[in-house]
Image 1 (cartoon, one colour):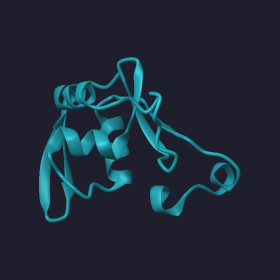
Image 2: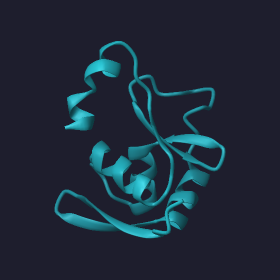
Image 3: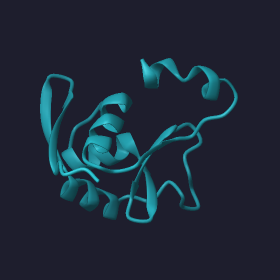
Length: 102
């Protein structure tokens, strides 16, 4: 388990502080991805408590940032010790998604 409790993320020209507590608080205000209304076009999720949340929504809610990059979001959440998952099928399993892995 990670001992990191704080990190930063850059969106646009601004740097934002991201903490395990801010992520948990953000999750409390979001509908989980495993709810009755999942978004069909999102691929990266973080496990907070017992629910999955889309990484960009989670980080943007936790920091107040807009335009957060999905790769940066998933890396920062993993750095904080949250399990991060990808939803993938077909070519995404064999080749990855260049917008998310590059």
